[in-house]
Amino acid sequence: MRYIIGIGNYSMADDGIGLRIVEHIAENGLDRGFKAIDIADEGMRLLFYLNEETEKIVLVDAVDLGLPPGEFRLFKPEDVASTKELGKLTTHESDILEILRFAKSLGYRLPPITILGIQPEDLSPRMELSPALRERFDAYLRAALEEVGKDG
Amino acid sequence: MTQNLSINVHHLTRVEGHGNIVVDVKNGKIEKMQWQVPEAPRFFEAMVRGRHYTEVARITSRICGICSIGHTLASVKATENALGIRISPQTFKLRTLIKHAENYDSHVLHIYFLVAPDLFNAPSVFPLVPTHTEVVVRALRMKRLGHEWGSLLGGRTTHPNRVIPGGFAEYPTEGELKNLRERLVNLQPDLDATVQTVLSVADKLPSFERPTEYMALSSDKEYSLYDGVIQTVMPDGKKQRWPVSDYKSCTNEYVVPQSTAKYTKNKMGSYMAGALARFNNNYDQLHPEAKKLAEALKFKPLCFNPYMNSVAQLVEVVHSVKDSVRLIDEVLGAGYKPEELAQPTKYGQGQGSVEVPRGILFHDYGYDKDFMCTGGNCIIPTNQNHANIQLDLEALVPKLLDAKRDEKAIELGLEMLVRAYDPCISCSTHYLKVEFKR
Image (cartoon, rainbow over all chains, first blue to last red; front, top):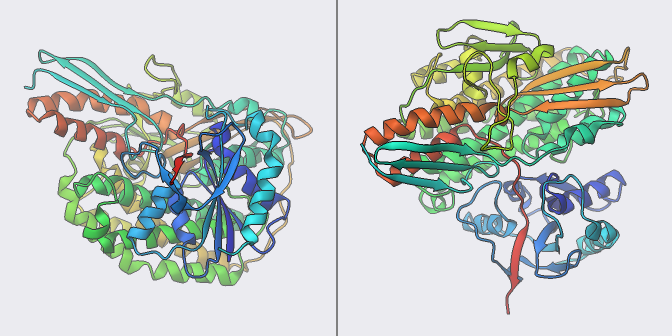
């Protein structure tokens, strides 16, 4: 099985981009040949999709890439180092790289994972996306759909 | 007594969101003792106004990624009450089953990943992987069941899109329900092992008591999670009830300077909501297996120790598993089949309340003749616990100072107290911050 997985918080503006992409896919029946999964605030749920039957995961998330707002990159977890200051593993203030490290320490075999990282503009408590991300929504969607079909 | 102390826990870890604990003691006098919570403004009213009744729950389920099932259920119940939509006994049972899934899932997460590290002297679950591999693997196995149990009833995502006003949009098959039943029955060894793990560290839970008022949904029919009336039990054991429509007169929201979240109170200076409040109110209706566990832990109502909230969660984990087996048997035994959605019969104002993992949750909406929402209100359990946390800390700090604990031990004691409430402050973000490797 292949998955596009969204993680984030709807109530914090652009932090909800991953959830909105996944929701758009599910509502418009675009999930053909893969499943669209919303794991919301709980990164730990990613672990349940890391198994032998998983051929590919595309994770959609807001990522501070140091780029202009709305820009995005596709990258592998092993291509980057997290620079977020995280003292401890929590379910909330976590990031997916940490969850993947946790999985590895437990002996999980990681399937091919690509992160679709989108540079946020606004992470304040608002229930909507910033204009920069709204404008490029279709580009993120296309990138996610294209990537999930690729091997590796 | 410790003479000078300055604790400033900024963004307490292992709670769902951001909260600060600030303590200042000078020359033996407590000058400042605050539980500070910056709550994100939610614009709840603006989110729902002008929406058709079929859309409202889908929107309000997004308020919280952890309790999205509970928000959906409180929302559809409020809508159904406002519009005179009468659900079937089968819908009632299936909704109770998904409510059990949410409480089970959240409690397992809280007990194993947020509370256990304190009891195992670890900063997080990370360092426990090599030393307690079997416990971590078991926790994840149990967590996975919770995720799949909720998804089966609610749909594949966190936000349960199958639960809608009038009933369900889609149904699990009979085979899927039977499979879930089998998995719940087969969970027994993991439940037993969990109890043993908790028993092995139970003496690490501080023995602090502060009698308060406890609020929970209550019903004459069952241990209330999905439905009931508002009940509180006072420190002397006296109980009183109100209809859910009177929720404003029991919650009495007010504003405090140190927080942008509203606080609440009822008969006393504060009240507690959550697993311990449910345990104290509704102990008699717990499943016999859950009671047996409580007895083994010498845990009985009324319990005034807020740290025991995590143990009450464990008792509820057992209750939810056992009661869900009963519900599946009853649903399948009564000619299980997909049903037509029940339709509106009136319009006006309606309230809905359920017990989410952290306590009693209220939704309240008005609808016009076209079934469009004219306004809404929501009171979450975490906010209802803030005043009680503040009063607990005020009572606890002098005790810890008298016991001449060092600053680090005092800080840990306070952090553990707040974590016991499992507060969900929900203003956190999850974004990554990365640097590309060269």
